Image 1 (cartoon, rainbow over the protein chains, first blue to last red):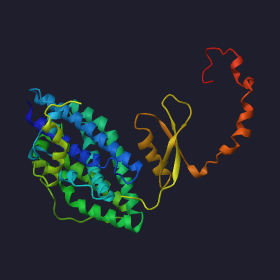
Image 2: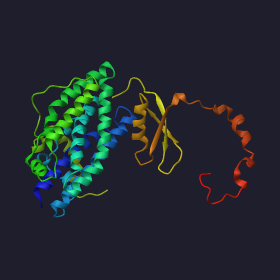
Image 3: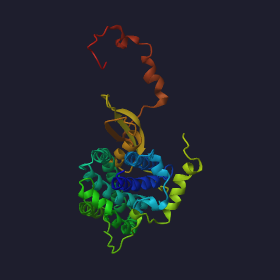
Image 4: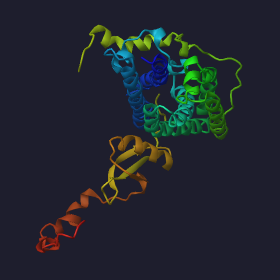
Length: 250
Length: 96
């Protein structure tokens, strides 16, 4: 098995998996019917992408491993999602700020992966980029609306943008596997992702009348398997069924 | 997460891939036309229902009064000759 490629696919799949789970928690609890459905649509888009990454990873792994084994039967320290994605849904501004930072990163990552030398990766990226283009449009539109809305919406959006700023640095931290994949022409250039991320988010925040948070440190660890306390609870929820009834089917 | 003030209602019209006309699909709440379009996309085109969307503020629609249904619509009931059912249509003629 190609261990590096397998690890790389896990890195690609884990962040959308955990973010998708967070969004799915809002199903039936969104601020209104329209936004509720929009957030559930985004969750489903992300799960579809995760399935593509994990199906590929399972094939590379061999020995009968399936996408479900990868999604549901790993332990907390084996997940490689960025810490940003596991942060809870506090209010709508939090949901939007978390989504906005992730979408800005995700869009730039997938744009580059469309050109990956690995044809399977470039095909998955090409399919996903249309979805993520819409996600980025949805979240940045809401950043502008809330930032430029009422006094209260402005304060809440500003607080959320400032709160999640400490998590964005991890998006650009390159692991050894990602370095290796970039040199092989398979992965993405993180310097370019960072530059595109900064220019896109700054432009939206300016338009929204929001201050760009100045931060001097970064919350990190997710990509090495060191997570915040929230991931354990997510996994308890996510894995309960497979652990209680191994191999169960609908 | 509750809203103190409800957004206005918009009527949504969708044109399907094979359709020639926009058909009424339902309604959404939205603060403005742009948001109404996005909401309509999220609510009414999830299953590939459409390739084009129109939204119209519900308040802009003038509706007939259901009470007046009798005088408005009943008179057409027994005038079958107004339907073009007495003609044989050539096969080449579509969209009738």
